[in-house]
Amino acid sequence: MTNALDAIWVIDEEGIIRFVNPAAEALTGYDRSELVNQPLAKILPPDIAAVHNDHLKRYLEAGPQFHIMGAVREFAIVARDGEEIPVGLRAFEIPPPDDKRCFGAIMQDYRPRKKLEAERDTLLARLAAEALSDALTGLPNRRAFMDELDRVQAAMRRSAVPASIAVIDIDHFKQVNDTYGHGAGDATLRALADVLRETLRGEDFLARIGGEEFALVLRSAELGIAGRIAERMRERVAQTPIELPEGQTIHITISIGVAPFSPSCRDQACLKAADKALYKAKNGGRNRVCIACQEHAATCAAAAVL
Image (cartoon, rainbow, N blue to C red):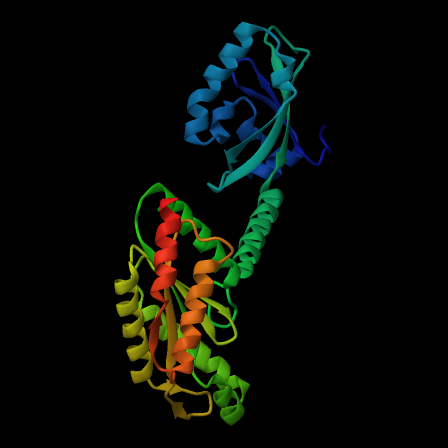
């Protein structure tokens, strides 16, 4: 036990430490003389120390319970320098050296494990975020947008609250790339994302769904309100100069198609209607907002009743 890599403890039925090995000294920062004949509560956090003796008392009164003693318990100890150290503990009864029952315990330092778990969780969270975000603009991506549509549909089924969809496209974006280079095109996309963010309401959801195309879910917005929000976006973009990496300043415009969103929309029908309205805006001269045809709005309304 003296040369074991894990910390070894012997505690009697009164919670008094009878033996520690060098690994226990190294783990806690205490010298053996500072631990032996001291209560185990000395190295326990206050919340654990407060209940430890009661747990020990109940165990002693109930008699040996090997399913408890054989299990690995995870908790924490407090080192001499005040650091709270996560540990795993496996306890077992040992032959008593005198008239008091004694327990051995193997204590493993869980700090390396916790560090790896934290790094794993951080990595998984980053990968999950990257899977749902657009690296260039920092906006949600198409996958995240489709997930949001599902959430909005579910909410609309629970309560009759309107919602709308808008699809946004940069006018003549190819000319920006051809004239100033793809770096300027990337800067333009980032700048547009920033401008659009500034015009959002708190409940709106904006995403970049591909190339120079963005999409917007407008909660609690019937078609008229959605059209006014889209028009405000269009005006803001047209009025905002964009600074390119090499010092040039340009102005861009956007075209927007808006359609009502229904809880009964299937196969992205509402998104396709907004996309159709977008192309109507572009074919009509660009730098404008077009609302989905009334036939589509009436179809969505009828489907919602069925």
